[in-house]
Length: 86
Image (cartoon, rainbow, N blue to C red; front, side):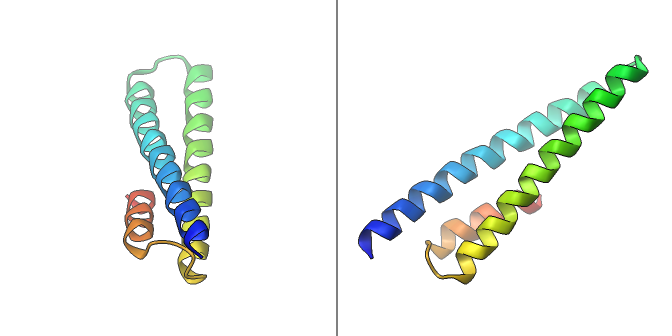
């Protein structure tokens, strides 16, 4: 059981870092989109933002599944879920 919890905490920490990175990248992409003039580039940026959003939603679903199965630290999971929903 102890090994599962340690692995779970490590997994949750990795997912928190990933979501934080996604949020930063998404923010930068939105700024770039606002200043973009080229329509083809705008479409590429919008597509990238959509992909980032989908990945964030996948992480959210995984976090909810882990929370429901009681395999992880609830505080860490709640933090991860909060990051995903911002």
